Length: 302
Image (cartoon, rainbow, N blue to C red; front, top):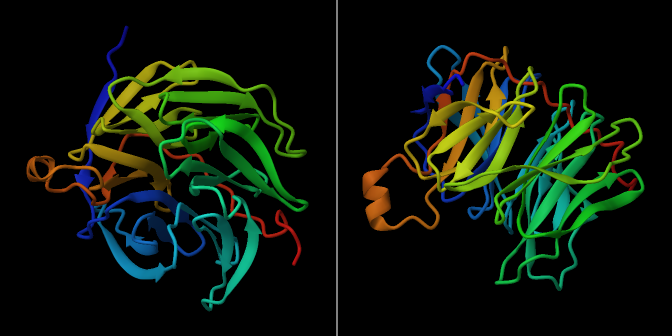
């Protein structure tokens, strides 16, 4: 068996994030978006494709946690706040879109992504010691459709190049699952376990143009590339224990952007890994799968 390819990610930006997450590339405006969940912030930056450096250019803050961000073709943002979704216009105006979680529930929205047809999906995690009962939901024109109700910690999402398979992460049990998916109708097939990650927990992920998954491993200081059959094809070493999410960025989608976190690290951990919480980048010899823009038509009309 051929050993997996090995790459090393390098720090790409000066800013340090308590819980950096959810990088998204906006090709029309050549900007990178990402969030710091516990800082209640959506950040925007410019990627220097020659060096891999990222310069933060803007920050938008909110009153609650921010689990994920998506972008529409016109530049508007869809932001997953603690329990609700908010649209942020290019002029900064904010419009409530939908409530996903009941106000009484001790849960918050976490990672989210746009499906090939422009629908936004987002999951939840408990903010207490509960296990199970967390959801994965999809925003549709008719409202919020719940796909899963039995998760421990809903996390990364990705689709196959044809859009006919959807992969989803449940972090606490360490599972990546897969199901058939019809982007045209939104119909989903039966969910099945696809991969179990050891030595750390699967977190955010993305797909490349060849249909491989790139999975950030929280607590594992790495990103794993897995083929459609689950084979380990490559490992990207990251000098930050809490590697949280990944996305391909740049005009050619050939720069892998990796978010990391300082949350839950001890002073000794931070001394050993002083770049924790920063953005990292790596070139891994493949191009990413383009991600659809969020379609505001795939949301309830106001």
